[in-house]
Image (cartoon, rainbow, N blue to C red; front, side, top):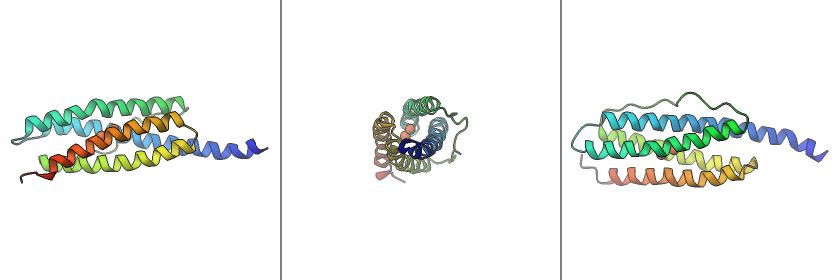
Length: 152
Ligand SMILES: [Fe+2]
Ligand SMILES: [Fe+2]
C-alpha cells in the first residue's frame, strides 16, 4: 500500500524533472547558437581574441546538450527540438554582458535541477550536474574577468 501511495509522487517528480531538463536543453541550444553568432559577428580591436573565446565555448555547451538529450530520452521523454531565443547584440561588450547574464541564469537553473534530480532518485544525473555547474561557473568567471577592466 505504501508503494502505491508513493507512486503518483514519484511520477510527478519525474515529470517535473523532464520538463526542467527540456528547459535546460533549450538553454544549451541557445548557448550554442549565441556563441556561434557572437564568434562570427564580433568586431573591433579584440575580435580575434573574442572570436576564439566564443568559439571555444561551443564544444562544452554541445556536450551539455548531449548529456541532457540522452537523459531525457532514457527517462522516456522527448528532447526539445528548439532553442530558447538568442539575444543578438552588435557590440563586443554587450555580447560579453549578455553571455554573462545567460551563464548566471544557467547556473541558477542547474543548482535547482540538481536538487530536483536528487528528489527524483536520479543520483547519477545529480552528480553530472556538478561537472556541468563547474563548466558554467568557469564560463561565468572568464566573462566577468574580461568585463572587469573593459576599456570603454
Ligand atoms: Fe552549458
Ligand atoms: Fe556556459
